[in-house]
Length: 291
Ligand SMILES: Nc1ncnc2c1ncn2[C@@H]1O[C@H](COP(=O)(O)OP(=O)(O)OP(=O)(O)O)[C@@H](O)[C@H]1O
Ligand SMILES: CC(C)(CO)[C@@H](O)C(=O)[O-]
Ligand code: BAL
Image (cartoon, rainbow, N blue to C red; front, side):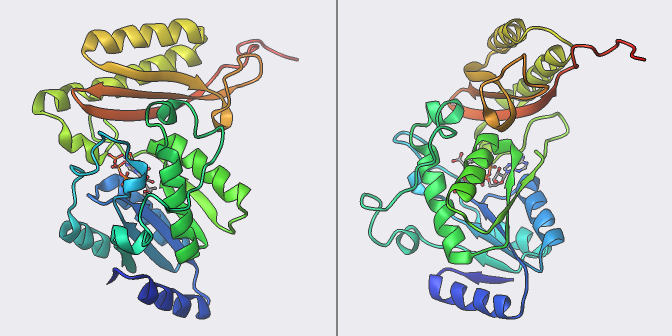
């Protein structure tokens, strides 16, 4: 695996792969890798000839008072895991390399509507930072495909719209959430949890699963979400949001939608956890015999 820190050698390497007609897959990350990230690398490996991973803790997507300084940086360990999983090129730029003019005057990308609400409601400006760095990486690397996790479901939706609106010729692949055995979605930020909060954390997924089951078996969204909110608060979580959305994160419409997405964010101490589940609704005439 080649590890590159600068743009010129990255461009040169990718040019050679492109001339040789190889299909390039990109896996952008902020590092501190776990099986969730590695499942993206596996998917990229299966879909392309060359896998490029990036490791960059992007200051533009962290708000004031968020954990940019504290975010775990574990390059040696990450390199080893990526090489073992068959990554070909690892790009690890510095902040100065990606944003040479400084953060204040950086040209940014805003993806309207889909960036609002949910995580974008709490982390104001977060998705502008994500859309900006992902656009930069798309321009630099020009991959044929790029893999993103469904754990960050709104991020995936923002990137799909970004790619459609800006006509990037890139196929976006969403990869299902990888979980610990107890159900907790793997996340670098799980490492911030105290032992007692880590023991409580899977209850978040459990409550979301119960709410999903209640919704699919016909309970009204109002009641199911209110019950889950109460259960989460009683268990000791501070709720950021819990919402049911329709396809492509549109406002849920019970008359129209047979599929939805249940999305939540909670705090345990100062650690913020996110998760989401697909919801399938029984059709109104399910159980009715026809013909
Ligand atoms: N459990 C997971 N399953 C599948 N994909 C994941 C999982 N966790 C992260 N990813 C994906 O990996 C990519 C890089 O994510 P990132 O580096 O932010 O990891 P993270 O563990 O989610 O960190 P954070 O705690 O900052 O959210 C994103 O596309 C993200 O959706
Ligand atoms: C997509 C991403 C690498 C952009 O910094 C980041 O938001 C992440 O790790 O999900
Ligand atoms: N996992 C998405 C990146 C972030 O939380 O900043």
